[in-house]
Each structure stands twice: as C-alpha cells, then as structure tokens.
Amino acid sequence: MTLPPQAANNFRPINAIADIADFIGVPVQSASFPDHILRFRNNRAAATVGLDDLGDAEWVDYFGRFAPLDGSLPQPLALRYHGHQFRNYNPEIGDGRGFLHAQLLEREEAGGRLLDLGTKGSGQTPYSRFGDGRLTLKGGVREILASEMLEALGVPTSRTFSVIETGEGLERNDEPSPTRASVLVRLSHGHIRIGSFQRLATLEEPDNLQRLVEYSLIRLYGEEPGEDPAAQLYTHVVARCADLAASYMVAGFVHGVLNSDNIAITGESFDYGPWRFAPTWDNGFTAAYFDHQGLYSFGRQPEAIQWDLAQLAVSLSGLTREDGLVKAFHSFPDRFKACFDRRFLWRLGLETDDPFVARGLSEGAAGAMIQSAVPIDRFFYDWRGGRTVSGETYASDIWGEIRDLVDRCTPVPDALAHPYWKAGQPCSMLIEEVEALWSAIDGPDDWAPLTAKVDAIRQMGDAHGKPLPAIQY
Image (cartoon, rainbow, N blue to C red; front, side, top):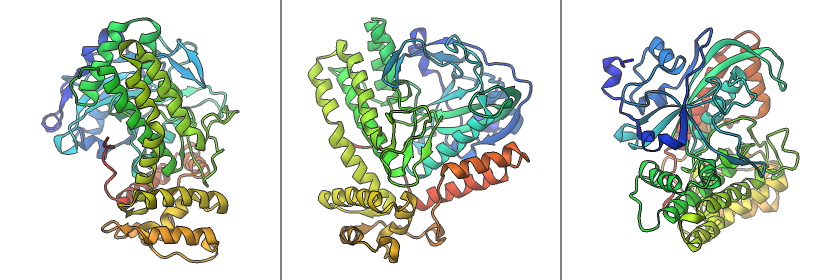
C-alpha cells in the first residue's frame, strides 16, 4: 500500500531487521478484526517519523489492518527470544500476541535513529501457547497512560503510537468479562532484548549470536564493531540500563515485570502490564499482584535490572574474554548512583558541579520522603527550582538539611517559567485515577477524561523542559 504524497515526503522507511531476519523471528499475519475504531493516535510521535499527515482511514489501514508500509518489512515478524521470568528460565516464550510491523528512521532533527513499530494484541503467533493473542482495551488505555507519564518525566520509554478498538469480547480472569479488545502499536528504538541473546546462547548458535551483537552495535548504537564487539556492546547496555533503573526511581515508577525478556538492550523501557506509580517513597511497594516475594518492588528495581544484565553477560561470555564483561557488570552500581543524582537534579530543575552535593541531596531527600511519607510527586513539585517551601509538611529537622543542600545548587534557566509550576498541584498517576479513567470509558464510553489527562501529562512534560540526553560514558 502506498503512502499519500504528503506523508511519503517525510517518511523514511527501512528494513534493517532483514540483516538478521533468518534467525530473529518468524513471518506472521495479523488477526482479522470485526471492527476498527480509532481510539488514540499519537500525532506528536508520528511527526518525528513523517506519519502525522495520514488520514484516519489510512492510519487504520496501517495500524489496525497492518498493510505493509512501503520500503519497510514486507511481512510482520514475531520475534524469538527466551528469558528469565521471576528468575526462572523459560525457553517457551517469544512474541505471543505481537510482532514487529515496520522499521523507520526518525527525522534528522529528531535524532535520526532507527525506530521499530511493534504491536500488542495483533493476534496469535507460533509463540502464543494457550493465549488468544489479544489485548484488552483497558490494557491499551493503561499503556497510553504509562508511556505518556514516563515520557513526561524524562524516562527513556517506548511511546504508545496507536490504539484501535477491535470489536471483540475477551474473557479474562483478572477483570470482568467479556471485556473489550484492542490492538496497540508502540514506537521504540528497537525490540531486541536480553532474552534475544539468551535464546541464541542456549541453542548454541555462536555465529548468529555474533551477528546479533554486530546488528545491535551498528543499527541500535550507530557504531562499527571494534576489536571486542561483545564487550563493546555489553558496556553500552550496562550504562543505558543503569540510567533506566535510575529513571524509574526518580519517576516513582514500578514496572512490575522486569524479566530478562522485558529488558531492551537500548535501555528503553517498554511493555506496560501491571505497572504502578508509588504514592510515597516505599521501597517495598509492588505493582504486580502476583509478585508475592516483592522481587520487582520499587526499591529492588536496580537489583532486578542488574541481575538481568548478569544473564546477558553469561550469554555473551562465549564470544569474548570474561574480564571485559566483569568490569562492565561491576560498574553498574556507580553508574546507577551517578544517573540517579543526575536525574534527581533534573526533575528538581537544579544543577551543581559538586558531586557530593548532588549525592547528598538525592540520597537525603529520598530518606526524608521515606521518613515523612511526603508524596513523591508533591516533593518534586514543591521544591522545583529551589523555591522556598514552608509549613508543617517540611517542618522536621531533616528537611532543614535538604534545604541547605538545595541552596548550594543553582536553578536551571526558566526552571519555574511554565504555568504548570504555579497551578499548585502536581500531575500524578496513581492507581485510583487509572481506574477512574477506565470506568469512564467502560461505562458511558466517555473518552474525554482520558484525553484531558494526556493533555495534562504533556503539559507537565513541557514544564520540565528538554529531557536529559542519553548518558555519556
């Protein structure tokens, strides 16, 4: 199917995955859906890839019926991978209700990087096992909210590109059924994950493992392989994942399922199932009702991600001397701390050249939030730009110590210029509001509250200014 001329002028399709398509996935077809009701289209994201001029009918054809995008993949690929799920190795997984639909390049002014359009709820694949390959509409709505909120808070994240209601009724054990169905498309900087490497290592395919390393360096990191490509790639992944872990903590976000098949080697967060934002800085707060041991609780997320990185090191160990992998692996804690301090200051709209001040502020403020149970979003809103705060909430001595550290920092230019900082209330996304937004849709089919919330989230993101650039190391 050919794009309309106005879209084709800015659209830059690519089929980079063809380099490794013989082993990374299997060709599949989308399910046929009885209906296609466009519920969400991310025009802001579409503008970065030259697809914002599509009419709604064309949009549905490409992202509901999955007509091929000219110049990209001729047929969708369900990606193959293994993974540790709650620390138990599972070789029976892969894209069970999604596939890679297309690849494209960002506009140069947006960065020019490779992007994947991947799906969720697009039908059964060889890896569906006993699943129906579908996504509930509530699941699609939750992905919109998670990805929009994370993007606004500077977290490196996939973006929800499209949600289309499909007219099916689904049976689910964890929500009233039959429930409405949807198909989602996400935009991300690659769907290669730690589990992709684990599969090849387990199947003893070193040649393909080496090809995957080289693809990842060239296509995802824009680097030519050097003398030791495996160690080269692993160093990148450790650094990016340390930054991801830090960004989760500063955002107050709990992913819920940090299995190794859910960790992209670009360090970009994706696949939002049982996520939640923590109301307060509670290290034991969990998102998934089935995480009985708190393995992926708020405070254990850095540990969980580093554990997954250890599995990647094991998978790469046959391609390189282990000392390079070990060195990179053990750099994770220091990298995490540096990224945590950097992101903490960014959210506060402050800067300092003194690493001891940055460390004392981020660590001390987290401790003060634990001790006082001040809501996370409230703290960052109140202290933004180093502004003066008073009242009973911050009356204890520990907050006096935080004030001393804040005063040793410098507000970034225009830290408080946006009207958001004068509204008096932070934009949050706690589970009660998620449920209320869904109830409006599920009952009277009222989408206005969701639209208004997305607008509010984006205003908050604008108020924070430019997101931090990718971590340098």
